[in-house]
Image 1 (cartoon, rainbow, N blue to C red):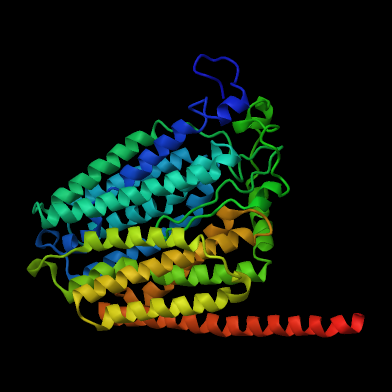
Image 2: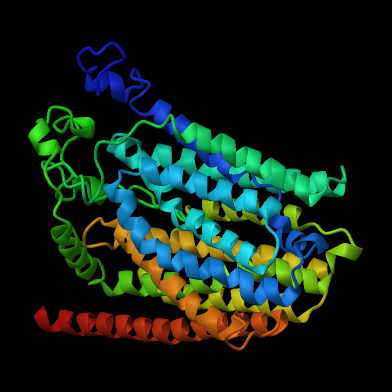
Length: 491
């Protein structure tokens, strides 16, 4: 990377110290600005109420059973192609695609009317969600490895701050200033447009994880993806720095500096890339511990997506918004902030997750089931709000633990691959659940029956992991007894 005058590259020590602004500070600042403005969407907590307004000409059944499921289907269909395209196109084009998809979504939200138009809108929203991976992986292609943890915290904080600002401002503008939901959508569209404009100034990365990796450097930890919705974070692990393929950054030029044009333009063998992905997939899931946490990740994320997608519908049934004040924005903001606090606290908990992890997952999954059950059966809006906040706090806490456990138990540091596979499985399960329970072509159940099924779903997860955890503890104690019995004999 040359300076602005086309001179020789600055010394690495100066760049690592922050002397070269475009090395990491500028792209990080631009990406954080993009994440912030993209998340400032004050209308989002009131989406269900907006779609049920008379001018949209939609019924409750159409919104819950025919429109919302489209998001699940489009997210699943686009996830794997977007995963590969993100790497092949080197992140920035997909970041721009996300911004464009969200602009189309909110523009249509303002002016589209009727069932088919709003279903088409949901497809673009699914595209915007699927391309989220580009936001969280871009920065790792343009900064040094020792800055990963710092830039990750900045990017995640930007999105959380944007989401909180959007939720709080939306609540204030609706409850205090009396603004219409149409006006909130105009603000959301304006904020997303600013984010889209900011993304054009992002530097174009020269490397990526699979298709454009440097020949002398197998960048195995480049895309330590953190789930936007889940509040999860992957921390740098000391062993990662010592893993094979993590060469000293002082010996490997950033972004391919010093490499010949011939190597940079080497033709990509897509079949080889897919073969390598399959090999890494088998290696990553060879650990029973990692497999256990991944199973919980996929199962729980499926249920989490269903609950947050249809929570507004439940609240609308408990307390119709046309006849009372609603506080959806305040609840979303509170659950996000408290969830973030829980994530910080859980990072300081010292326990043997290898021994007690499955039992902990079982107990907390049961608490999630209880929260969803109370949300469904106690027809009081404040109880629903409180249960929803508890639900999100517990999930965000557990998904953080699961993320760290998965990262530290990988046989190869293919974070993006593992988390992408886990998310894909979660979406596949969610699609199956949506087709059977929600979609009008399936059972098309009412919202209260749906939430009873979701509570039972989490209870089943709790039971499975409780049995598995007890079996694991029993096996561990038996092995310990066998070792103690052999010790006297050896003496």
